[in-house]
Length: 475
Ligand SMILES: Cc1cc2nc3c(=O)[nH]c(=O)nc-3n(C[C@H](O)[C@H](O)[C@H](O)COP(=O)(O)OP(=O)(O)OC[C@H]3O[C@@H](n4cnc5c(N)ncnc54)[C@H](O)[C@@H]3O)c2cc1C
Image 1 (cartoon, protein in one colour):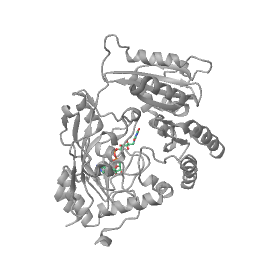
Image 2 (tube, helix red, strand yellow):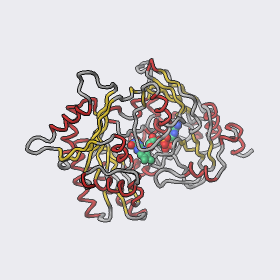
Image 3 (cartoon, protein in one colour):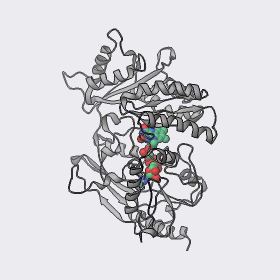
Image 4 (cartoon, helix red, strand yellow):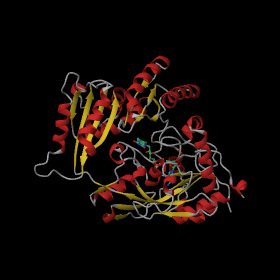
């Protein structure tokens, strides 16, 4: 019996992708990463995942977990050897169980974020992670997705109350950590190991998530800061005066905005005479109840706060535009598409201390302008959480030596000079393994490898966290 026959016996015909076009969509990632799969296997239940994993581990077959395949770091696609199986979790879409009394939802790892949100909206609830892609829940847990509303709701880690995991060992052990308790100090909180670690410790098959109340009132505006330094002043003023109402503070550079307006057809340019400022910030306030009598509506709250920021000798605010929220958010969510359509994107998903953002930007713009004048700096980012998509656009695909030189230069700056992170929210994968190897502390690598060796009988996926003791050596 071939491996394909054996796996087909577990998952059925529907669980093996043979059509070459369909198969390609599992082999090609969202950003320049692609490979060749030995096979694409799509189990439909936790029991099938367990059997597939057990079979692969027992036969020494390498596999890569995949969910929505929207990851941007080469974590979810197979390499070019043609030896890795893609273990797609996209059929794990069992019916959702919404528990309004506990404000919890139990969800299969293969459920899409938009589907979950459609269902939660019927109960006045939402899963508040907001991003320009529509991933699956398992992939979001495994990459600890951040997104535009981190300032208010945190990342995926904050939403996870419980997980069901299949461990990459010979029996495909199913670990049930779905107790549904928000607080529980009676044992080690093992679920944290599986959040943001790209599947290396285990495969997420089910999650219990805390749902948030759906906003019933929002106010949105585009701010133009007086200069780069004013971005921090505006952030602190909005945090100080709007408190927990502040739900987004998204910075966008002129270069990024220009490319979105040039390449994404349906966008409306809201700036006066279409003149794009050097930097703009999308601000959103939200609250979960409609206006009550005698209570200032949110748009008036925002107007009052912004009015104060135009005052004084050196006001931090140069301009503020109020527009339809969906039109303003469409601009933010089109930035990646605009960049991709305008050249080759050299992406950096960095994170810094918020107080360093303006200084970093000023310094690196100077250095890049001198050493790499052909590059356009098209940064945008979540600012309040210190996250910046410091994306560079090159006119064509640069050669590997050029890419290595510019990546090392920028990241040495971020990590070496500013003690920042080379992956703020996209996680680890083939594309940034070299930077993990270069920047992660030796003790972190040693401990991560030891943990992985203790839990797993094989290495999973495209990420090597540290020295791994393989199954044979353990025996
Ligand atoms: C236009 C665009 C905008 C984006 N914006 C943001 C953003 O603002 N913030 C942000 O954080 N990310 C963003 N992303 C990146 C991406 O969407 C997120 O990382 C997302 O959470 C990945 O989920 P996925 O379902 O696509 O997972 P995949 O890409 O399929 O997988 C991601 C990683 O998790 C592993 N994995 C997948 N499923 C499982 C599972 N069930 N169990 C264990 N491991 C698994 C994979 O092996 C891989 O390492 C964006 C992507 C795009 C294309």
